[in-house]
Image (tube, rainbow, N blue to C red):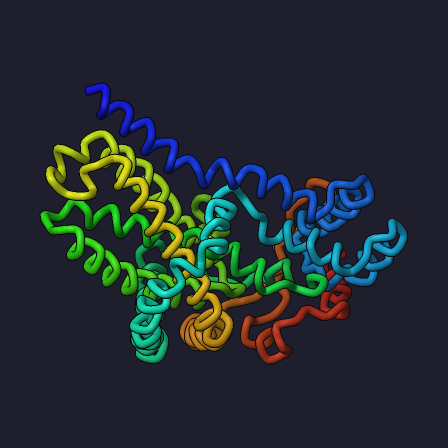
Length: 363
């Protein structure tokens, strides 16, 4: 029994090692973004714009002037604004060691990425070109009776947007989905090799489907649930549907496998807590490499096309209206600007003249 306890304690320490590394990395990130008083001051200015619900483009000149006053260079501006729009949490820094050990796991990740590309293309064809995702959206709308509207994304006009940071912000669900799939498959009565092969197959299918779904919903479209007074951006809705299931599932499956692994898989490598914890880290960082590959090969090249195509399909079906959702002095206001089709034809940008016209109408 003492040996079992020692093994479990060792396994827990191994699993906690990424967290131990993530804490100093998160502190270093905060320092890199900016912790000086002038950085905090500028951060608060940007936060006020975001809290008001207006795109950053509307106050771009004012923010640049404020940055010059407090001697903040454009690179620092970009870091502060990007950190507010795409905040980095502990879950993001848990993946950072995977970027260090990529020479060891890169080959395994590359072998899995090769079949991933055609699977991604298949789901893009199925969900977008064959309009299956549109059918899903119609079904959700009929069941929930939510209205579909558009609200401009506040990151429009961010200073020197960094696609790398946006990619890192998206990665945790992609990566943890791989670990979640692996832990589910370990319960099947299969040998170690079969577990790894089957979990890899399931993971590639799931990550391809989820990636296309997330790319399609990274738009201005919002579910308006008037019954409960909620506005649910489609992208946030997808994230909220996936995040809790993956997060709670990981904690449950990890703890159960650690404490009951010997009973569940007697005689297998996964029955040893220490070996199991090492396998978990191996899967975690391999999935990190695959997540990087998905960001480079899909989100950089195909995500914008997928987003535009799905948005056009929803416009043709629902002809949604574009609203501006703002807050000023504690007062919330949702104001109609134009149809979403008109906004798309204008290049998906709100001009100052549009805001001035809206202001005159409201007076």
